[in-house]
Image (tube, rainbow, N blue to C red; front, side, top):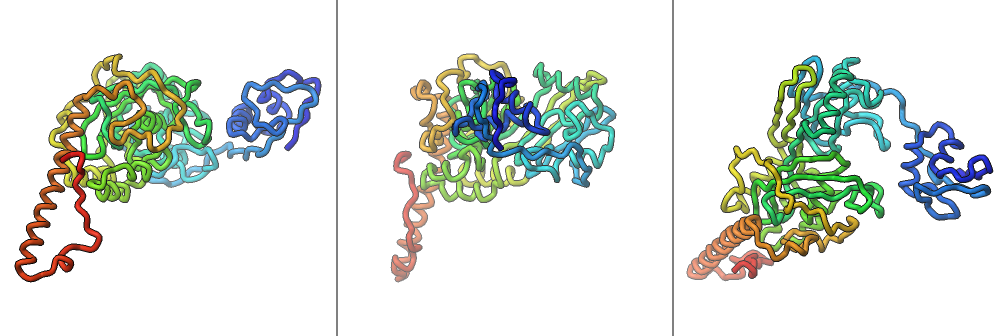
Length: 427
């Protein structure tokens, strides 16, 4: 669609101009079109702060489809962890969108909530998001709190704003972070090269993620994380930015790009991990809040989902660390040393896969000289796995010698294409 600027609109910002001349679109709709590069002036995608002049022709390549203004209830099973007159705490499964948007209108958690709770949900966020206080990505399972009335919703939203509502996540990431605990402090915004992705960008919104390393494996680390902010894809983006993408993440280099960097010693195990992982191995496992009516502090926790648990069992069996970082009962989060925060030196997200810090080379060169406890644990885990491979190699050689004594030719005994998989760097 083409729109010609007349004198009445001359000097207006382009988003305000389009809201005035297009039918049934909001300013948010227009801003999304501009961000997606769908609005052009003179054949060039318009920036969001561009001001139009008389006679200009503004071209909108794609007119947004108007979302339904009402939500139809759907009988979607809900895993209710806790419920009272004010709140519902539920365990969202993987592969479930929280509310309609981005072309998804049906099969959402919001529709399931409407079916089960009818009108007993807050209306603060409008008819398409009944009761929704915060969100999880489609393929991120875990705990969410839902408000059953507007007063409860506002109280919970205030807790999110003041950081008295705590959400704790577990994530399995590639490689080994250099510190056992720390804070990633880097702004997040839309990826300038791929509008479907978020990225660490200099003009993004302030975003902070705290992490604690819980267990090390030969090529991966189990992290516990908490958010100070709640940006879209925040943990996934910050993990990728740190050089340690979430294992299985299809959008932020958490699959083949990292698998190809795993040493031959562990590549088969890593491939099995990706076969088990349906998407990112990230889960909201704990939520702590203050009840909006009683003022009582409440804590809820769920076990890891089956694929996540299967992956951890595989890693414990095939490439265990020699020692845990913390005891399983350790509460994890304490006061963080400001010196550990990665607040400087960020660039646009588009570092290529070879910059991923799967093996302690990465986006924080100023930290390379420090051999932290985390690195030492990781090295011990890798050496343990290497010793296991060397023992298997010795066993194979012994069996081959025994076979020769029995008159079995080596070519009949050794599997075609067999090569030792010992990492020479750890000998």
